[in-house]
Image (cartoon, rainbow, N blue to C red; front, side, top):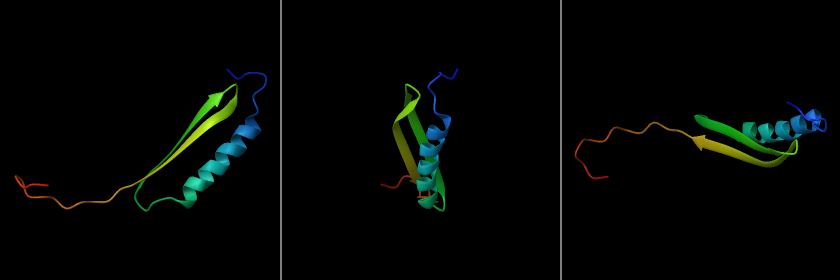
Length: 65
């Protein structure tokens, strides 16, 4: 339930800017993530994540790494 002091447009503007940062750094294969911690209807912390993925060759069994 939204509180009376929630600022939807302010939250949207902050999150939109962070999503744009992720899009500009997007890997060709991988994952993007965004997590926002909300405190009193305001964003207190944002965590951005970018993980790249690549296919690796199959190693023979029994071999040392």
